[in-house]
Length: 192
Image 1 (tube, rainbow, N blue to C red):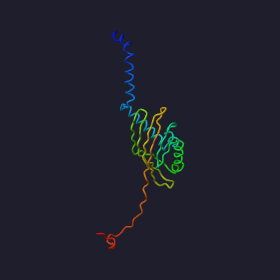
Image 2 (cartoon, helix red, strand yellow):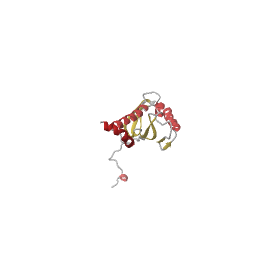
Image 3 (tube, helix red, strand yellow):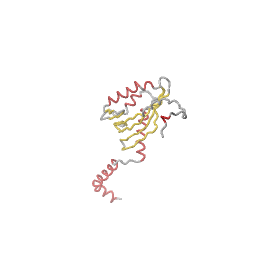
Image 4 (tube, rainbow, N blue to C red):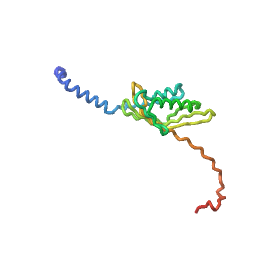
């Protein structure tokens, strides 16, 4: 045992850089344990769910808090691309002041939420959602869509740096077609 202890001071300076380099490379290789991956996934999903919880006050502020306060932000929606947090904030406020204000008892429902963890500090979320509510006329109504968002962890907080939002198109009203008697065809409409 004394021999190992005596050799350690001589060997340590030569071995330590190699050990530290290997440990750093393993940490930066992107390989994460299943436990760590599940933890990051749960954190990102919880951040998103909390921001879109319509039963709590200050929805606009919570939604805006999802976006990075510095650096670039890219948001694509309805055929447009926004790269300014201020413009994004105006869009969120506009929606809640003109559409959200008319929703009675809204509930944000995640139909699917998939988190792909890229590293301990980055993840991509793809999700489908719907917002069930009643209109001012007390009629049931739903808006729905899908989103993909890139999250990064900055200052201990998960924030979106890039996203794409896609609304489910409204189902057009189908005009009622009058019933016809199939036995009363005119010869001009028979095609053989």
